[in-house]
Image 1 (cartoon, one colour):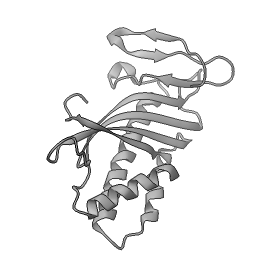
Image 2 (image 1 turned 90 degrees about the horizontal axis):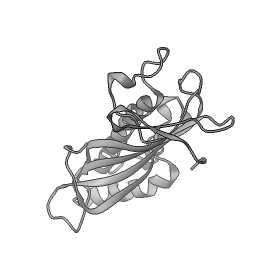
Image 3 (image 1 turned 45 degrees about the horizontal axis):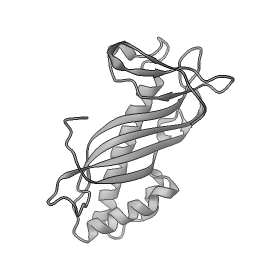
Length: 190
């Protein structure tokens, strides 16, 4: 982490991170929930955290869509994965593609819930500022092979998204996915 950060409890039980000391102004901590009360500063339609969550969820949806398309098209170029995944995640994505080609189910993102974030933003205006952003998500994905669970049940997958080009929404990539064995899920807790 970037250092110790003061936290404050606000109405509704949300945890909001304070500003870091010195010149490094990066918000980090539990992601605020979507609500009209957390729309961000007037000059910014949504808070940077909300923007990041929405953008990262869209990028994650694209990731699973591309994995499924590559799995169903044997002559497709796996180099396309670099448009949705970091270099470290390409190998695991290729394994998912191989599993589907061997008869596995297509992967479907049912839901995601942010659990932690690191979003650069201006301490004065509250608007997004350039830098590397990251977002951790608990996701519920149908089609993940799990020997501990029979059938085609949805499984919990912990996912890290990164955007080194923040606030550009096109910069989001899946950096890591970690299946939680035996942890079934549905979209209700998300």
